[in-house]
Image 1: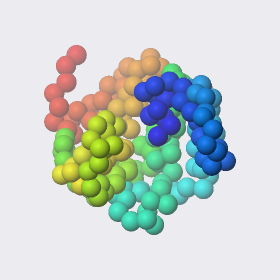
Image 2 (image 1 turned 180 degrees about the horizontal axis):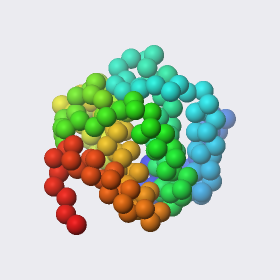
Image 3 (image 1 turned 45 degrees about the vertical axis):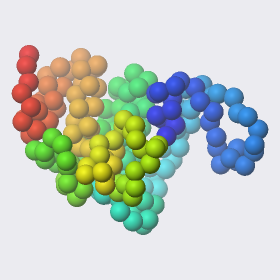
Image 4 (image 1 turned 90 degrees about the vertical axis):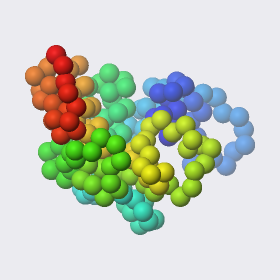
Length: 186
């Protein structure tokens, strides 16, 4: 959530567990400070997370045992937002090299249990907060897809482009385009 707040609004009040119980107004924390805290938290948390597929989260046990890949994608997103493509690339490559995921030819309406989903969650009921959710894909109004393998490949293509590795970037882009049946141009 803090990643989204910073990318949408810049600085935001940064509330820690200890701050949660105070009722005092909080000043905005700088984006760099928030990102630095998130990076450190994710690095620590990854040490306690498993190398596995989380996929479709449909119960509390799965919600509290998310995979290391979820943290890798979020950490890579933070690095990319900061222009740190060299730091993001190995995180994304770990996901690709794990061979835990594969692209599927569907463009929309991914099945909740398909091999492309890194993290999705059931939506119990529509809420006003979810009405404008721009960071996920809805599936039959019952599923929120947060991270996919296709997103990882496209992020890797962006990293490679920004690191002047255009041939490798095209390779990742073509994997997605070919599987999804999307025509590419020069």
